[in-house]
Length: 257
Image (cartoon, rainbow, N blue to C red):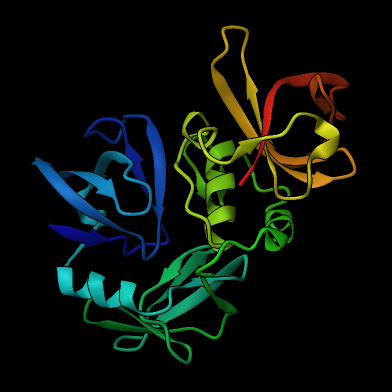
């Protein structure tokens, strides 16, 4: 069975319980497969990155395979504004969406969610079919000061890898969800000075586990989610937190996609 996220953002949890840890979020218009049902919960696998977790069935909308195929066949549009209102044509109800939300079958300000038609006057863009690294830095900077939220992927809160994933998705590159998976992509650079805006920097803990990721933006700076989305200095040692006056993250490697 296939389903779609019908709300601005929906938590995906580690276990089928509202008390369970949120491991990621679905944004409006993102689709997934339902692989198991347990009470009021669905075990899902996301179509974007094959991530698994549990979703409250009340926060999902089942759609046909044909709807997903038709949506994928057309150019995929996303909300380019930081946030934006959409209106259900049938009853006039409104919903506030976050940047990066997918607008299925978008055409001239209207899009569809199963059998419902929505409209918006907000800025919307086509997801590039080819990766555009030049767009990464500008897109990332629009998230400045968004608060850190474990598992978050929206303008209301992001974690480090969720921030990187959504930014890259809007620039035409589908990354895995977690930093430990993202590090497997691209090729390594030998020196920090070789980094260009849009390259990814990965950081580890004393045991070698990848625990953090950020986006290089040039001139020895990095944008990343740590407390909030912020800009800090970076060198061969790692990230120097300018607010705390300490190195907050130890650099492991920088990669280019």
